[in-house]
Structure formats: structure tokens, C-alpha cells
Length: 276
Length: 244
Ligand SMILES: Nc1ncnc2c1ncn2[C@@H]1O[C@H](COP(=O)(O)OP(=O)(O)OP(=O)(O)O)[C@@H](O)[C@H]1O
Ligand SMILES: [Mg+2]
Image 1 (cartoon, rainbow over the protein chains, first blue to last red):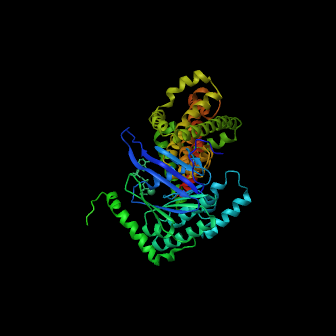
Image 2 (image 1 turned 60 degrees about the horizontal axis):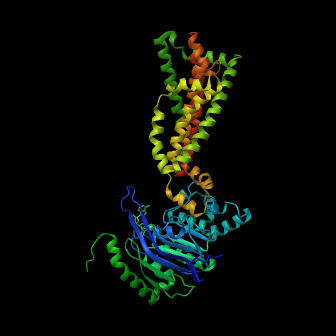
Image 3 (image 1 turned 30 degrees about the vertical axis):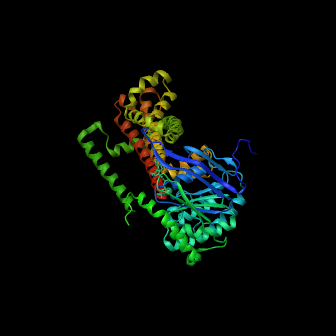
């Protein structure tokens, strides 16, 4: 039910940020760190949206605010027509930048973790967990503990743990950061397959130009801190794309467009001056 | 195997040192063999196990209170950054305060008997349990809590399913120290405020210049404490291995 005061959001908008900023308060009451915004951003239902920006520009902060993990300092966040409060709304799933697997649980129990809070019966938990184990290529490691796995496999455990909850909006924060280049390509294809199968909306945070160019429908390019959305680029790929589009001439065009937008920002982010 | 040999070696050295001390001190310290004989006789006598039961009951209550109370307070404080930074220095000074100074107050409040002993055991044991569980929670990687929140865990589930298992290795370290100090507290309590229990037995033996009995009871207590400590230590080691 919509209250009459609520902002009118078009039906195909899945999540929206309006005038959102985030200032981390300083411990000593000083001015604090202005990490983000103001940002206006709309995620369309079912799209694959990539966010790219130099390191420290506020990408993870954007994810936190969008998901309800931390409150915006100003502005408002809406998910599926309802304002997002202090908790993560049902329907949002997050894969974090850091390794968030629980070392005291087996891979299997890690994946089933979110489902075991009532509401889902045991047989259904098993079914979804088995499917996710197979999908993520973790079947042989179901009974291993995360410390016994490689970083890339632990990240797959976290992805699986989020997937089994069947989120309608999946937020991924540099999920392939710990992987080598070839594995990244393969995981990117997997992510596309998953996106097609689940019909979920995906927001992927990355600092890799090629990843953003290859995977997404739209790319939001962020400035150095405080992060602003400098530009949004439509890629125009078809829904059944995969990593082979890297040889498409359009791919090169998108990548160089991204780099021309990001170059100055990246130099700012590392504290240097642009020399040509 | 190596460990077993080391342990036996340590025991042998301790017994030898004890024997030498006995030669030096004479009747003030019973010999190892004499102590073992007296301990055996005690365990076959008819009053000894009554005292053991008395001490065991008081210890059980104290440990229960120290562990449950300590975990409840420690976990709650640990989850609250401000409260824990205020509480930490206070707790550490309470921890290092000689608790015997509180003794008159406890006696006034609880009188002689079981409740005074339990109170005494509890105040000894609860502080390390609080400090260790509080610090364990404070040291948790924030990502665990963020992940739990992202899966919409209630606060209670968050504690039960994330905070406690993640902090368990540290918590067990606290329990180990809490265990020893609770036992110590109960025994001290019995020495002053009781007509029964192993602490009383020691005190009584001292009063009657019965060095044999005193040393025998101490030996029995030491063996029990060392075994319990070793068991908790083994558990601790296994948990720490699992976490890395
Ligand atoms: N809890 C916090 N308290 C204070 N400042 C913070 C906090 N979290 C982040 N910041 C600061 O806010 C800025 C943005 O951080 P954020 O983690 O969002 O950047 P990011 O784009 O995700 O960086 P990276 O590419 O390294 O992942 C940084 O300057 C960071 O130091
Ligand atoms: Mg980040």
C-alpha cells in the first residue's frame, strides 16, 4: 500500500537513491569524512548495473547506504517502492568486498546460514543448498571449512550464501578482487548466467574497466571522494552475452570511454597531479 | 608421545623437589610418599566424601553463576562500544583487587554457610569471564556482524549464531581462568565461613597441627585442578586451530 506522500517511482525502477550523501562522523566531533554524494541513482528492474570508480571514492559506502546497512546523512533511499530504514529489506542480498565466510561453519552450513531462521523448511533448505553448491562448483568441498579453501573459493561460498536467499536485488562489492585474471573472466560469465536465470537486478561494484564494460547494461562512473556519479554509460549488449564480447569493437570503445572519464579521477585518488 | 614424556618429566622433577624440601623442612612438610598414604586413607575414610560433596555443590553453583552471569554481562558490554570502554578499566581494577578485602561484607550479607561460599566463588570467577568474553566480542571482525545484518538476523540470533561461535575460542580461555579462580574462591570461603568442605578440612587440619592431612587435601585438589585445566586447555587448542 502506498501512502499518498510517497514519491512516485516509475514501475520499472527497482531501487532509487535521491540526493544521498554520507558523512562519516569524526570521533572527536570534528568535521568528519565526506565519503559520498550527493548521488541520484535509479536501478531498473532486472538490469545489470556496474559502479566503477577510483579506490576510496565511496563505492562500498554507496552499497551500505543503498542496502540499509548504514543510514544516509541526507537524502532518501527507496527499494521496491518502500523507504529503506535501518535494516536490510527482505529481497536484497549482499556479497561483501571482504571475506565474510564464517570459519566455524562448514561450506554447506555457511551457504544454508541465512535460510535457517524459520520460514523455510528443511527439505527446501537442502534443495537450495545442493543447487548452490553445484552451481558454484563447491560440491566436493561441502564439508570443508573456509580456512581450508582458497580466497576465490571462499568468495564463491559467500556468493552462494547470498543466492540461496533468492534476492531480487543482488549487490556485489568487488567480488572478484581476490582472483586472477582468467578466473575473473570465468566468474564473470557465471555471474551473467546467474543474472539471466534468476532475473534479479544486479549492482556490481568494481574497479576493473573491462569487467564493467563486459558484464553490465549500464555503468555508473564515480568521481574521486566524495564520490559523485560523473556519467552513466549504456553498453547496449544483448541479454545472452558472455566474455567473448571482449573482441567486439564496441567493447574497446566502451573501455576507452570509461578510461577517459576515470583517468583524472584516479590520479586525484592517489594524490598525484595529472601530467601529460 | 613427546608431550607425555615431557609431562612425566615435569612431574618427576616436582616430586623430587618436594622430597628435598621435606628433608630440609622436616615435619613442617610431609614427604610425597607420606602424603600419598594419607590421601589414600582419607579417600577411604567416611567423612571425606561428604566434604567433597559440600565443596562440589558450592563450586557447581558458583561456576554456573560465574559463567552464565559473566557471559551475559561480557557479551552485552562487548556489543556496546561505549559501555565496554568505560567498563574495561573498572573491571581490570576489580580483577586485581585482593578479594579477601570484600570478605567481611560478604559475611555480613550472606552469613555463614553455602550462600557465602557461593558468593565468594562467584565474585572470584565472574570477572575473568566478563573480561575475556567482552574483549572477544570487541575483537570480532566487523564483517561478521555486517554479514549477519545483511541476512536480517535478529539481535538474539546474531548473538547466538554469530557472536558466540566467532568468539568461542577466546571465551573458553576466559572460562579456563574463571574455573580456577572460582575453585579458589570457594575454598577460601570454606576456610573462613564454613564447618564443612575441603577448605574447612585444610583449615581444621592446620588448627590441629595435622600437617599430613593438610598436605594430602592440597595434593588432591591440585590434581583435580590440573586435570580440569588440561582438559579445558585441550578444548581451547582445538577451537583455536579451527579458527585459523
Ligand atoms: N567507518 C568509516 N569511518 C570513517 N571513514 C570511513 C569509514 N568507512 C569508509 N570511510 C572513508 O570513506 C571513504 C570511502 O570509503 P569506501 O570504503 O566507501 O571507498 P571504496 O570506493 O569502496 O574504496 P575501495 O575501492 O578501496 O573499496 C574513504 O576515504 C574511507 O577512508
Ligand atoms: Mg570498497
